[in-house]
Amino acid sequence: MALNQFNINDIRAQFPVLDQQVYGKPLVYFDNAATTQKPLCVIERERDYYLHENCNIHRGVHYLSQMATEAYENARKTVAQFINARQPQEIVFTRGTTESLNLLATSLGQLLVGEGDKVVVSAMEHHSNMVPWQQMLMHSKGQLLVIRMDKNGVLDLNHYEELLKQRPKIVSIAHISNTLGTVNPIKEMISMAHKYDIPVVIDGAQSMAHQVIDVQDLDCDFYVFSGHKMYAPMGIGGLYGKMEWLEKMPPYQFGGEMVDTVSFEKTTFNKVPFKFEAGTPNVGAALGLETAVKFIQSFDRQEVEAYEDELLRYATEQLANIEGMRFIGQAPKRNGLISFVIDGIHPYDLGTIIDKMGVAVRTGHHCAEPVMTFFGIPGTVRASFAMYNTKEEIDIFVKAVDKAANMLK
Ligand code: PLP
Image 1 (cartoon, rainbow, N blue to C red):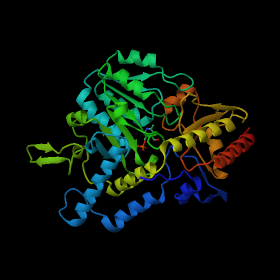
Image 2: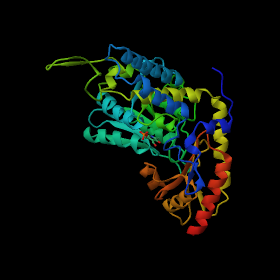
Image 3: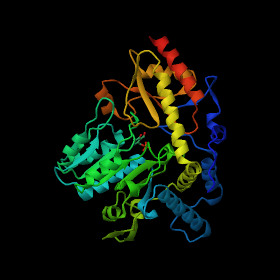
Image 4: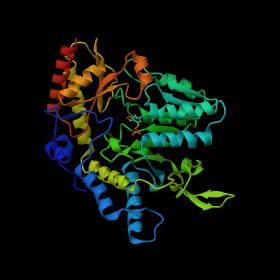
C-alpha cells in the first residue's frame, strides 16, 4: 500500500469538524483521549453501509445479508491483522473497552476466580479497568491488589513482583494511562506475570491510535480497545484474546447468534468469537472501524508517532513557563496527553474559561478517582493530542491557559 505523505493540511482536510469556530474563535480540539474526531472516509463508510448494504448479518440467505456478513467478517480480519493476532477469530467485536473489560471480568472471572482469590490492577487504572474486577471480586469474597506508583506516575515493579507472589488469578493493566500519559512497560510486566502462569489483560484504550500494537510480540493474553478513540465511530471496539483462553471461557451474554442448538432443556453455544457476540452487532460501526484502521495504516506509523511526541514535548515546554504550573504525571515514557494543575486554581474553572476561547480540553478526574486521591487534587486539566493537531494550536492553548490563570488568580 502506498503511504500518504504526512502533510498536516491534507490530514486536517479529512476532518471537517476541526474547521469551525466556537464562541467566535477557531476550535482547538485537545480532547482526543476522550474521543478522536472521525475522518471523512470513516463517516462515508458508515453512511455507505446504511445507504446500500444495511442488513442483519450471519443469518440471511439473501444477497444483502451475505454481502454485509462478508464485509463484517472482513473487518474482523483487518483488525486482527492490524494488531497481529494469529487469526481473525481471536477478535471479538464489542461496544468498546468498557464492554470488553466487563466481558472479561464476568467470563474470565467465572473461569478462573474462586472464593477468596485475587486480581491485580494498577494504581493508575481508568474506572473501567477497576470497577468490573472489584464488583466481580465482591461476589467471590476476593481481593483487588493494586500495584503502587510513585509521584511521577511510574509503577513500582518491585511491588508488582511482591503482588505476583501472592498468586493472583488475573493481572489487568493499562498500556497508557488516560490521566498521566504514562506508557507502562507492559511487555516486561506480561512476562513477569507469565513466570507465575498468570494471564494478563491489557487496556489499550489510549494506545491503539498512537502506537503499533503487536499482540504476539507482547504475548498478552487479552488486549482491549475502543474504536472511537482511534478515528472510528462510537459503539464499536474489540477484545483480542488468545484462542486457548477464548475457547475455555463461558459466554458473557446470551441470546441470538451466540447459540448453536437450543431446546427448553439445554442450549449449546456457537464457536469463538460468535459465542461472545450475542444479538445484532453494530455492523456499520465495525465497517467504520475497518476504514479507520486502514486510514491509520495509510501513514508511516513511526512518522506519526514522532510528530505526536513532538507535540507533547512542545506543549510541555511551553506550559512549563506558566507560573504555578504543576504537571501530574512525569514518567520518562509518556504518550499522547498532558495533565496539569495550576496552584490555587480549580481545573474546572480553568477549563470553562479556555473553552470560551475556543479550546476544548477535559477537566476533572478522568474516570480515575483513585489517581486524584493519590495526588491529593480534585482533578486535572488534560490536553490530549491526535495526528491532526498542530504547534500553532498549542500556542493558542498555552496563551489561553496563561490568560485564564491570570484572570483566576
Ligand atoms: N480505559 C482507558 C485507559 C480509557 O482511557 C477509557 C476511556 O477514556 C476507557 C478505558 C473506557 O473506554 P470506553 O468509554 O470507550 O469504553
